[in-house]
Amino acid sequence: MAPQTSITKFRVHLARSDRVLAVLGAGLSAASGLPTFRGAGGLWRNHDSMSLATPEAFEEDPALVWLFYAWRKHMALKAKPNRGHFALTELAKNKANFLCLSQNVDGLSPRAGHPASQLRHLHGSILDVKCFNDCGYVDRHNLSDPPFAALASACEDYPADQTMPLLDPKVPPPNIPLEEIPRCPKCQTGLLRPGVVWFGESLDSAMLSEVDEWIWKDKVDIVLVIGTSSAIYPAAGYANQARKMGAVVAVINPDPESGKDLKKTDFFFEGSADEILPELFEEMIGKMDAEGKIIDE
Image (cartoon, rainbow, N blue to C red):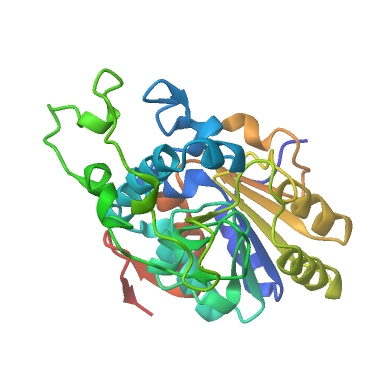
């Protein structure tokens, strides 16, 4: 049987729920104007964007990888959190046992005021900078744009009818000497790098253990799967793990296929998170205006 689609029934279940888990994907940030990772140009200067997200790519050409991430960071900083981000922030304020697991690196959830104690960035953050040598140095929520002076060309804005030179593969990228890439202030040897988890790297084991402990601590009443196909582990396993312990799953996604494996006791809401989440949470957080502000509590 098809999953439930009743907003009223969802609100009742959410109101009765104590422990709430959310798994966030790139679809949450789509309304903020940010493309999904695989859609971040697909090809960037004739490079597969995913091929630039590896430690090997950084070792081979750290300047090119930094240009790519400086551009992405600039786009993220230009974007604004949308109503979906703000709705989750308000829900966190109303549910002490609410935990968000974000696969997004764009930093929009923290900028929406989401409590840090109720948010885990599974894949790191593009706003963080860390040491490539893994000496332990991390500079969190660094809003420098550009990240360092040599990357200025990645952070320029152009009219909509003009192509940014950095994005034109026919235009040679700026030559950035290795000595212009900052080194770690702690160990003095490793280059600084974006604080995201690249392909081939392990997620933070301490964080994963903490998440597992939280899930297994007690029954999760409801799992919100928002803007993600949950195709990448470990995020893909959390909904199933909680479901085995009795959780109801609610999927919010514009893709109708994302709800095909849900049970009749689950919920599916087809559409954009920035439109649907404020409506789903309205009885608990109040009515939200177009800017993400609560206008009645």
